[in-house]
Length: 90
Image (tube, rainbow, N blue to C red; front, side, top):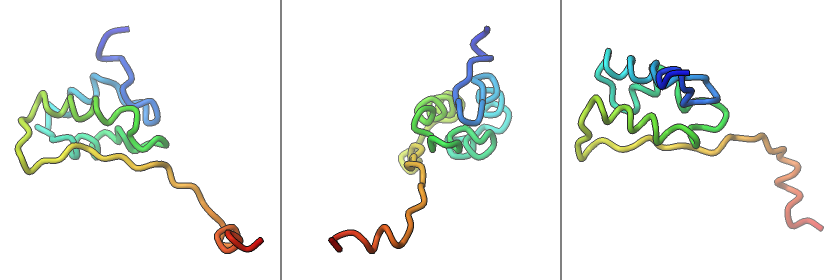
């Protein structure tokens, strides 16, 4: 396996080569790279790959003071209203 075949985003199966080629072709910042490749949009919400996606984007574009790094959010799980109402009602 070459470096370009290495999977960076396991959830969306995005490779290092795909991220690098997309970043170079479109001169992407981290957010644009995420939107174009879906890296960081899988089940984990970017917890495993966001640092690498951000680093790849920084190799192509220089970060300025107004640009923020990618954020991640925990996966959302449904909660029943009955479970919420039952809290504290023993």
